[in-house]
Length: 469
Image 1: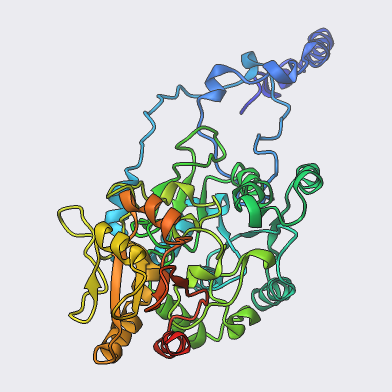
Image 2: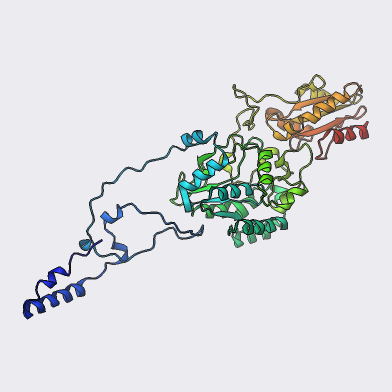
């Protein structure tokens, strides 16, 4: 910017004292009468049309995103060229996701950090998603990390946070729930209401709302979502997408971009990477924990169990999401059930499981007859299942092996698909709580006995059968 007067015109009047006096008065007049306009009106439409450069400094997640006001001369003293406004290009993120589908997590991470700089941050939960921080570190680019401290994390998780900060020489930007909301929830419903009426309300207060506040200061965020993590909910997670739920810096749906660099990576490959790079990990993993959340809602998983079965274990398999990735939950489509997994066929149906000549496929009438029998010729073991459920898929091998071992023992092994239209019947008559549910029908009693253990390996199931036979 240049002011509209120069010192050259004053120098030319030094030949006479009267001219000099008039020039001095003119300078004083100009300096006296020139005042900056009120701050709210000081920028002209011409200035507003100029493109603004993004700041390269690191701002906190909740920092005021508005540009600091500056003292600007009035419009009449500004010399600015005419600017032709160009239409804003809208990026096709579906196309970008397809372009990056076969890229490595490191390539995807580098692309995200290059594109958004200081306006993107990694969401870190304190579990194996530390791999995201390692990938960001390997790019050599500056990066930010934030985490949600719900107030109910395991002590091991807090120690892990500290270890990560020291290992990478970073400061994690912690977000906390609103204290008044937590106070109201606990005073009204107690400390463990989620065991009685579900975890969604507590997660909404302690996780979802703090996350919403954090994301309002960003244009993009990076998550550790993987397609193999949760049954029926994350199976079609793209590597990059417009966030369908949360809002970013500019406000409104569509203002935030979500990057999932490890979407196509299997859990085993993540762990191979962490071991290879000697990355610090949460000590809970060594105790059998795979998916780690709040202490009251997380436990170790057993052989034959899916990793998400350690979260909210008292709820149905499809409900194992806290709301942070709500937009990636698949809509129920087949028989009222989520069907997005690797068993989804081209015709839109999920292929069946527990397929063996040693396993009897029971129908609704067959189960009703089995319930009515008081004097059965043979005892029965029946699994209530849904083919889309990855917990059921995880125990398929052990159940098929069990059926083979019992084939010549005089005991029948069966399966009953209990989702869709059959779910209400299974809940009312067959003690269905969540998938899978295993029942033992003795020879001389009509009421089935429910297998309550979470151990679904062959030896544990065989021990259950032997004890009841």
